[in-house]
Length: 234
Image 1 (cartoon, one colour):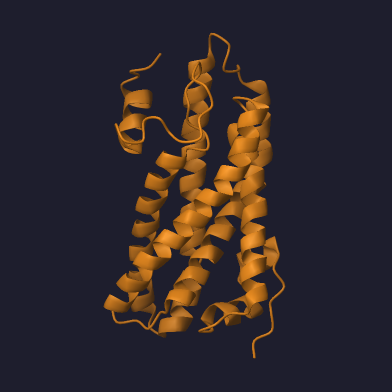
Image 2: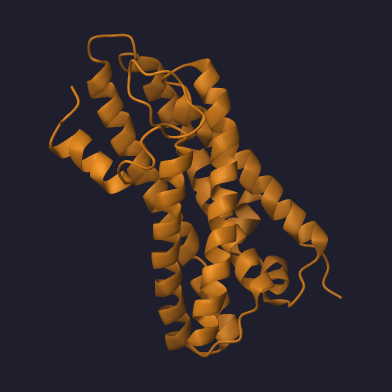
């Protein structure tokens, strides 16, 4: 029987021995699942608040709820695809192992984002607000920084799973191939789900909305191109 590991930011980022044992098991202890999900939700909520504070306290509260939901959703969607892809590449990774691994990766990402949240809280409080003439410049700056932060943290978190994949497969090259495929799946699923949920997206002058009003008229990459490169919106 596997004892439930101590779940904390440092232990998860280090992938301590007890956490590795839980991840490698065909059936991890329920306490391990609960601990990882709880840490992910708490860390992502802190970052989510910094994500939305620039617009309003209401948006900060909404984003603090949306961000954990987004990461959990990406973990679930990615796990389904990643299990099939990993098994098609000749590895014996179960759905439970894939899902627990995804949760670990996104928990690490959430911890990294929570660690830089003080910077974003500072920017949200010091940059020109959404009702000022310079609002669009602030919006472009913050959206760019948050996009980079989430992308880098997500890549770092999922990449940390290479150690687990090495242990599961026993084949370093196969583990690396699986990781690269998993990174691609997570990037695609993450960008599309983030575009729909949009914890921080609405432009200055628009009301706070539960979901992205542009979700089905363009994709995230088209929106960023128009906003940051073409500067369609001023």
